[in-house]
Amino acid sequence: MEVKAAVIHETGGEFKLEQVELSDPRDDEVLVRVVAAGICGTDLGAVHGHLPIPGPPSVFGHEGAGIVEKVGGRVTKVKPGDHVVLAWDYCGECTACKLGKELYCLNFFLHNFHGARPDDSATLHKGDQVIHGSFFCQSSFADFALANERNVVKVREDVPLEILGPMGCGVMTGAGAVMNSLRPRAGSSIAVFGTGTVGMSAVIAALAVGCTTIIAVDVNPDRLKMAKEFGATHTVNAGEVDPVEAVLDLTAGGAEFSLECVGNPQVFRQAVDVLPRLGVCGLLGVVPPMTEVSLNMDLIMNGRTVMGILGGDAVADLFIPRLIELYRQGRFPFDRMITYYPFDEINKAVMDMAEGRVIKPVLRP
Ligand SMILES: [Zn+2]
Ligand SMILES: [Zn+2]
Image (cartoon, rainbow, N blue to C red):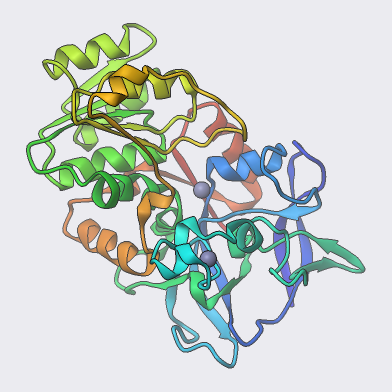
C-alpha cells in the first residue's frame, strides 16, 4: 500500500515527507495506522549514522502508537481496531529471550537495526528502490507502520492513544529502570542525572514507588524546574555547582540509587561517585560504541554496584499496561512532557528537541 513516510536520504540530512510503498503484513505481522510517534534520541543517532545500521534511504521512528488496521493470518494477539503501542522487537528464541530478558535479545540488531526483516526482505520501497525500514520493527515516522505480533502491545481504549507512543521506548526505559531494575524501597534516596524523557520518567517513577529523596541533576534550569513539578525533592544545576558534592551534601553521604540518563562518561563517573556503600548506579545513557570511562575501583569494590540497563528491564506486554494504570490514577503524569507537532513539522520538532526547547516531541501523522 501507499503510505506517507518521513524519509532520510543522506546521513545527517533532513526528513522529507514522501509517498512510499509498504508491504502487506505477513502471517505474523501487524499493520498499524500510526496515530502518534514520539521522537527519541536514538532516531537522531540513526539519522547521523551513529548506529550500526544500513545507510540511507531510511525511515526511522520507534515510539509509535496507533490502531491495528490489518493482521496476518496467524496473529492472535490483536485484531483490527485494537489500540496498540509499538515496542522493541526480539527473536523469542535465544537464551536471553528464553530467560524473559527480551530487551537483551542476542539477535537484537537483526530484529531492530537491520533495515529490513531479519530474513533480509525489505518492507519499504519507492518504485524499484529499496528504502530501509523495520527500524525497531516499526519505522513509525509514517502514517502506517508494519510491526510483528511480538512487538505490539495491546492497550486499553479509554486512554488517549496519542500520549502513549513514548511508552514504547523512553518512558518505559526511565520508569522501568526504577521499578524493575533498581527497585528502591519506599523511603530511599535516588539521584537522577539528566532530565530528558528517560530521566524525567525515572523521577516520576521514583515518586510513585515512594522514594523520599529524589534529586534531579541537569544543566538546563527549565528542565530542573519541571523535574520539581514531577516530584524531585531537590534539584542540582551541574553547570553551577559540583554535582557530586551537592548530592553528597543533600543525602548526608550518598544517594542509595543513581541513574545516568545522559550518555556521557563524565556524568557516569559522577553518578557512581555519589553512591554510598551498597549503593547501585544504573546506566541508561546511550553512547557511541567503544566509549570508555574511568571509575574508582576501590569505591566500587566497597559494595557498590554498577549496572547497565536496557529498556528499563521491562517486558513491554506486562509493563506498559501497568504504567498506563498508574497514569490513570494520576500517579504517572508523563504526558506533561509531550509537545505535539504535525507530521510535516518533523524537522522543526527535531531541532526543538536537540536545542532543549521541548522534552518529548510527538508527531501526529
Ligand atoms: Zn532473542
Ligand atoms: Zn528510543
